[in-house]
Image 1 (cartoon, one colour):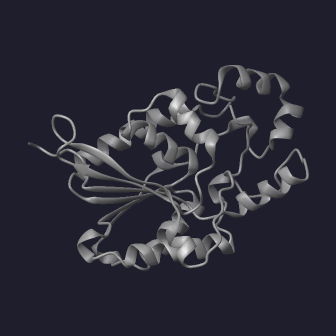
Image 2 (cartoon, rainbow, N blue to C red; image 1 turned 90 degrees about the vertical axis):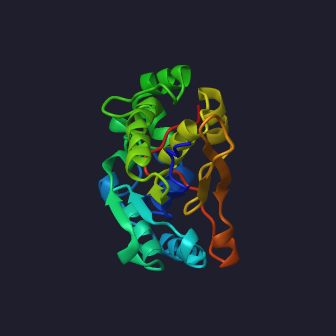
Length: 253
């Protein structure tokens, strides 16, 4: 039997960012705009986000050497790249294959970028209504992406995992929607199921969702889900767990 998958895959959402903090403040005050000047790609980790990344790095470092990641793929967005760099400080970086991959970037929000839920309803009521009707899975804001668009680009990442990193142990550091869309692909979910997961709660910062290759699954082996939004490394170190959305905002479908 020819194995096509990596041996292990860890999906990690970046640590808390300055954008997460700014968004929570704007939402709490019922503001329309998120007060941050950086482009979404340039938003850095908060001080807490750095601590969360360090706590998770310690968890990976505590693994036996033959169980640690051998490959690190990360979004080029600053908050994800910083998280990946902090994680790798606790690992043998020279032994890792490290790649920044733009396909792992967060969902693009286009015209709705840096608007709160209140701001979307106030400034773009027709888009707010359309999104409520269509649902976030298929709704594409002007200049932005739908979840389907994200899934389409991640399908090529899956091809890369199978072609270049078969039998490797791959750590992917990305964003909330990216993590959920990978789950859609790896677990062969449908629209309702993945949106039910999303509606139940945001993906915590520096949480881990993981898969292991199981040769007993399917005809040629498959990925088996092991961890979902795992935050025990943060809790064990006394580091606060946060689950704020990324910078742009939109209401739940």
